Each structure stands twice: as structure tokens, then as C-alpha cells.
Length: 65
Image (cartoon, rainbow, N blue to C red):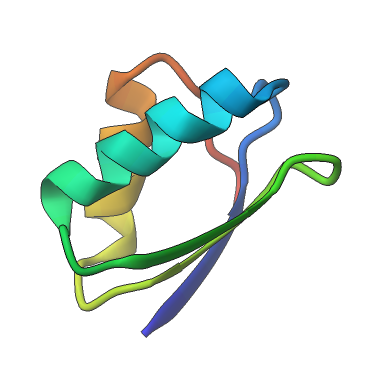
């Protein structure tokens, strides 16, 4: 399933890499697309939205629907 979210405090490529790594810890097969200028994150995964959000917030980022 495709999940869409905004990560407002993602500001650089390093942030995007940390978020990608965090998502991969809960689903190593997830397909992740990050649009840094719009702070938009799309994740194609079978894992719940809550699990993805928890992984992102655990590395210090906020998540908005």
C-alpha cells in the first residue's frame, strides 16, 4: 500500500537519508520516494502508517499526514 506524509523538519539530503534508513528498519523492502523541496515522503509498503511514523519520529523528525 502507498502511504503519503509530510516531514516538515526535513531540510537536507542527510535528513532524507536518515528517514530512508529509519523506514528500512521496519520494512527493508519498502519503496521510498522523497521530494525534499516539498518535504513529501511516499512509501510503498505493507507495514502500517503508524509503524512508519514511529520509525521517522524515533530519529528526530515530525510527521504530518
